[in-house]
Length: 240
Image (cartoon, rainbow, N blue to C red):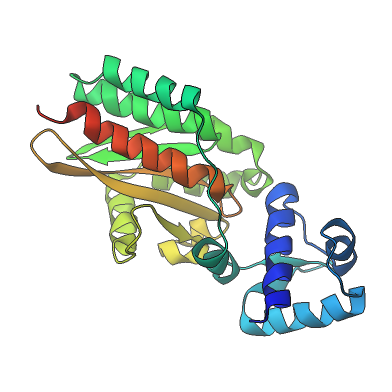
């Protein structure tokens, strides 16, 4: 990919993340100040389609990123936000108050994630499942179709399915992992993504905690918050 193609892909992804709408060459040229004509940008978009990073949406002249495009963005272009001191202290204080009650601690963790990020959150530990924030994803157009929402919720409520999804992502070396769209192996997650990490509590038992939302979720915010929550879970239970 050329530097200009990479920049165009980044602009399409950023615009799509904000609007959930297909992105046209004129809006990319005007809003993101790319030094190329709309015709040149359209040609570059055609090449990006050929590479599998974007696709032409039905009934629209614009383009939308594919899961491959988002994967490239996350691995090569993503610049994570820095968490504020107040946000960090609020999270740690909530965990400290619940540190001696496992179920309360994990409920606090998923509630913290969903309220902070405005996506759904879920945690698996031993044979228990905790989730929060299903109401949060109702605000996203990807889940307006009741059948899509029902399928996603059915996954969130199923321990075995979630466990199988997390196992698919174990191969990724990053501490915070992401499965985008069809990478999860479930058609119901076509327009969704799941960002997760593993954690260990008490005597070393392992669990998973995750954020679930549209595949255009704001990864630069999700990654640092999930990482901090995971680290805090382990920190407040160290030495039990």
